[in-house]
Length: 370
Image (cartoon, rainbow, N blue to C red; front, side, top):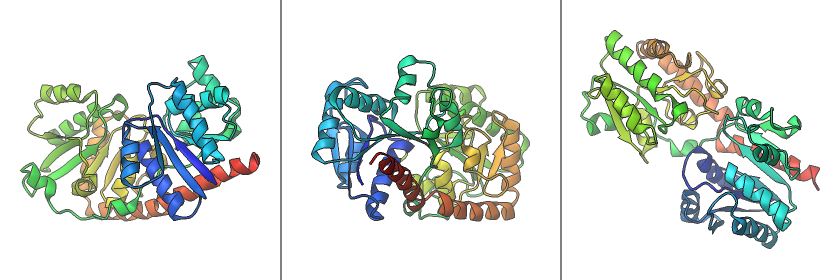
């Protein structure tokens, strides 16, 4: 297989990390004959791929209708005799379809979809999901599949391959006190945290409300830490201030040391109300950090309730607070959940497991179109 992975994303989140993970896994396990990444030259994917000495093309990308990008993609595919294009975000979906329509890109196209979002409200968007060149749509969870079904006519194109994480990047599984020292938190205080972009579906409001209830009703000594940045960060800070919780909730900002700080959390409290899967949950498994997460979206495909973590009712701060308190007061339960969670990760979500599943899906497309 000679594979192109294409994205027009300029940022760096779970899906962009997935592109790098898959490239490395396809290479390390010998699944592809050769491969390339095509992305904007001012993107995080390009910067990281270059630093890792991966084969990457950095192009100008002004919009999802950038015809120069679409034309260049066809040229790259021809030059390298690629036999499949793997598409990784909405803008690159449009660009690849344009490359096919206008410039004669004829090799099979496979789309990777990670968002739980209806796409049948816009004629063009609905059309491009049914474009004949798209031979398969690989979704990260079944709720993502369900969100696409109203738009996609041929449901046989829809399949599921879960999220992926690299356990080698998360070797730390024991506390060293780095967060206690950095933020001057007394040693006898437990830390409840979350690592998430400040966007609406992450539901930081419920998170703050749950923290408030724990502080009001629990006898435990607690500090709360929010890691991340985003457009709603200022709003959440104002909400925290309105509840007079500034002394209890720490905003740690964007961090690059997640493998070091995630094991420091006594509980990862994850309140997202529309999560496709939640990559940080897999990272928590790797670090053996106990989890309380919302029973929403694709999270129940990642968290097995009462076996690998605890699921709380969506948008219910009292339920979150009760489950966090129950977990903190039960060391045996913590040990059981983290042990099971780590094994569940090994069995289902490592680079090796997911890369093999993804390769099988891509190979199926090539065989059907050979």
